[in-house]
Length: 135
Image 1 (cartoon, one colour):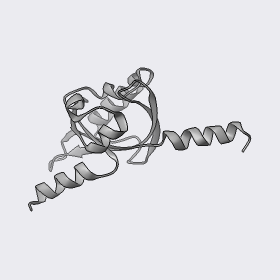
Image 2 (image 1 turned 120 degrees about the horizontal axis):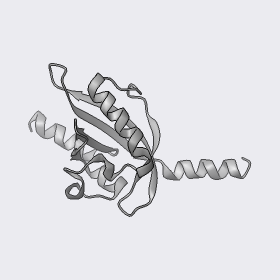
Image 3 (image 1 turned 90 degrees about the horizontal axis):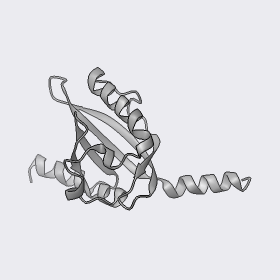
Image 4 (image 1 turned 90 degrees about the vertical axis):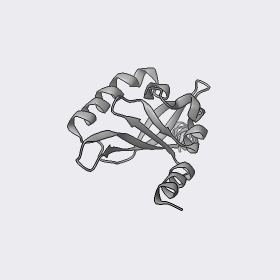
């Protein structure tokens, strides 16, 4: 087994959604967990804009941050998880906890970004229900 093959197995079989987008924000890597979380097959997602999974009301802020990260070669969140909304293929919104990293070549040139996402909709909705119930 080659290191490349092992890396591919790891990316494909990790339990979190893994999405790699190039510097233009086009999806270039979409693992099996991404299919489960967002409902889009790899064939549906590959080559598409990240807008595929970003709710309309969040797109402007997302692209402002994305473009700033591509230019500055730094992330605002420094890899810390953030809770945000995402779109499922069927049209409903999800709560996802995401982490982001820039992917740089050996010379420090940004090639794109990678994100790991986990669907936390059930947890967030349970917390909201508990707050509304006074708990």
